Length: 247
Ligand code: 13P
Image (cartoon, rainbow, N blue to C red; front, side, top):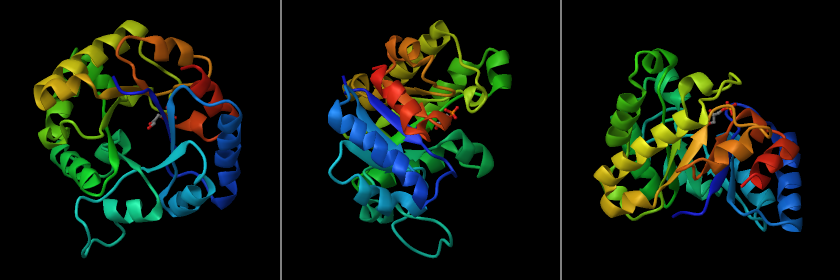
């Protein structure tokens, strides 16, 4: 099984001055190494500076999204190759804020995941149901459908991570119960084995959505939870460090 991964997604937050938080995190992890892999995904404007600031540290730098093509007439977009060139080693794809706010389909997400692998980046492929879908009893169907549509079979055996982020838990302070998390992660595991074959049994499945210092121990201990994708609580080194120490 993959080593746990605790990844921070800064979303559209952070200016150069905020990299002091990333450096403080790296210093704390230099004093006492983490049991997990640790990554920070700042906005694209900060990737190169973050990569320089964290070069000799255990903190990996990731991106929040990528375009599927290598280059071309795609104003405002950034390719996986460009992110790798800036120093990223991971990239989040299919975040619900991209799926909902930018109309990204499962096929778009799968193309981005393949682009990440093409550029040598590890994709973190996100899935998750809305509150309406959960209330309609469709959470497992939605999430496994997203896995089958967004995780390309060609990634079998390569570096790939999946994140279960229920849309209704993101930035709300709400979290599923531990049995609910375990039920969805179990269904994701089955779907990953269907898509990737035996390699699907090795893929880390992160939980994301209102992970905080005070719920991290319980969540990270749950069956099939291979780490966390953390939004708000990754912006401050002290909070993020507490979550990392919960592994
Ligand atoms: P919050 O931790 O702020 O709920 O965000 C979760 C998330 O969307 C991480 O990608």
